Length: 156
Image 1 (spheres, rainbow, N blue to C red):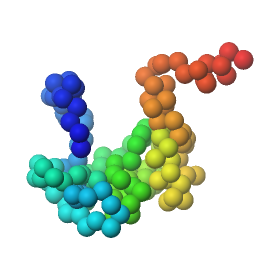
Image 2: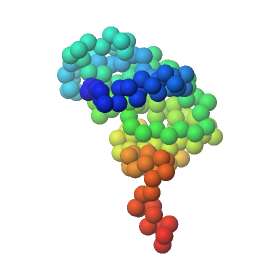
Image 3: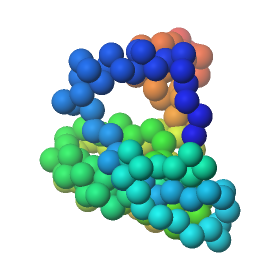
């Protein structure tokens, strides 16, 4: 994965200030090839080798995320956590989707075409409060930006 060196200092500061509220992966499924037939290994996040790509969250991270989500009352999810198009790297995304689908009395908003596709593939779209294929637009809306498509509806 690429490193965004421009924002490294900002991210370091955010983790320092809010690290107790941010849950990051502790293990990942890694491989050296971007193919559907490739075998993978699960590694600690600190043990990924230079030539490896993290293409899904690992089993410990799946469990940690599920534990953090189990009592949630509002969840906004934008983007799969792995290369979900390949079955061996869809486990994390599927785990989160199924965890969210099982939440009772929660508002669950899914943003992004890839997340929507993963949920549709699992056949659980009816379990969510709202699904939008506009992931970036959804985040901009939550950020308070005005979106032309919504503005024209409000001004009609």
